[in-house]
Image (cartoon, rainbow, N blue to C red; front, side, top):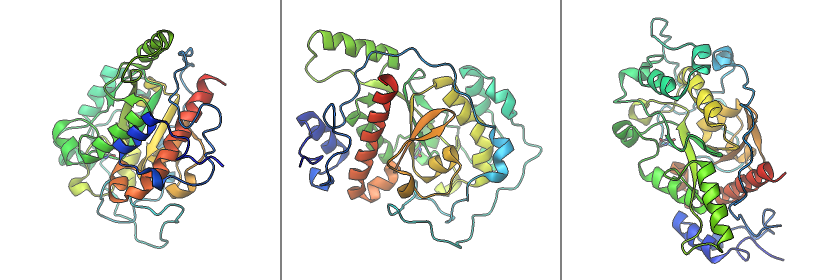
Length: 326
Ligand code: URA
């Protein structure tokens, strides 16, 4: 019986090595995802006409009360540690809620929902909707290709991100970039359409040494401001920031979202289920398939789980293929 590790190409082995994945970590079970095109072949399909803007679920303000159960521990090491399939410990006290800031200027969720990119970026830069504006150095809006088929959603800026104004620039960012590279993606690559056209062109010419050009991805966080001392995002902060992420998704119109870590998952899917219970199938946010996986910071602390993360990335690639070649 073929195993995932048996069916890896040389290129994939190299990419997995870049992610720090040892192939002996990969599961012995027959690779469910390696059926048609080999394991996790990045999709080189021609671009599809982009669907109309997805229908968005009700704005966060209306759901703030129903926000997912808050973080269980006051301090955050970014990327919530979580044993796969392990439910969260019951009865742990919830982090205190941020005080309401009725006087704080914040664009209304409806106004945000109508913004274009420049207006949205300005609104985020000027946001004072929660107390994080008092401790941030600067906001971290997002980065990457704004016309991307792929979107990554992380948690919140850490210290380096707060200093540089860019998402995922610390060690977790390095791992994220390696994970994206293993999928044929890059935050520095062209917008999806350009990249796919280049890929298609290369395929016609029999390819090129070094592999096809990477496809762009857009990266955003649930929170646009760093929580002090990297503590967990609080439900109130998540709810107040959510219209910005919602609008980013609506503007990018991704075809697959990778939700990395507990807070991304909780915010997008409005669930308190642990990641281990949500992996392995596609969920939906605003009409876009969402694949749940571990946060790179968590993976840095739990390297053997990189093999599970790789499975999640393979699932995401499969879902993307199904989106573009139904
Ligand atoms: N972790 C995140 O979730 N986002 C960042 O931007 C950096 C670390």
